[in-house]
Image (cartoon, rainbow, N blue to C red; front, side):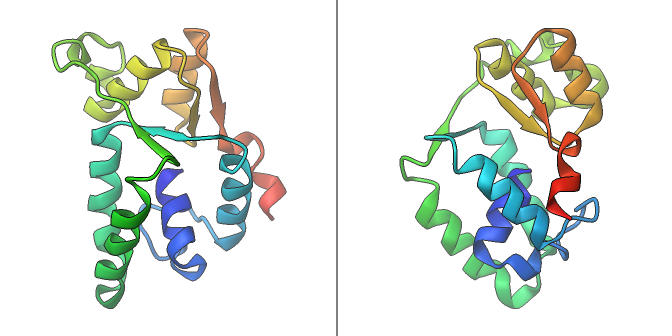
Length: 145
């Protein structure tokens, strides 16, 4: 969802171009933006940001540098907070083996009380089973249509 949000901030028309986008549109960006605007800060892990950066390589070549300039401008602001997860703890997360490193870091910060906003059904189910504060975008996606 962070990729949809950041690409939409850059240019709503690019939301549909970034893969994997699960069919997201500018309308999805507007709903995600509305939701995230209710939070004082967006908490991210370095691995989530790395995935956003890697997936942004799917933007049209002439837009990539401008997108990264936007990230360079907004990421160091109070709107974003980076949460580090101890490398020794990540492989102990339930999510590590089935879902990978990034989802394991998300699981770890959710255990610290950080609310998680995702469209990943498997991650959502895992976190919900642990009584984490997790919200699945697909539960309200119909509102973006």
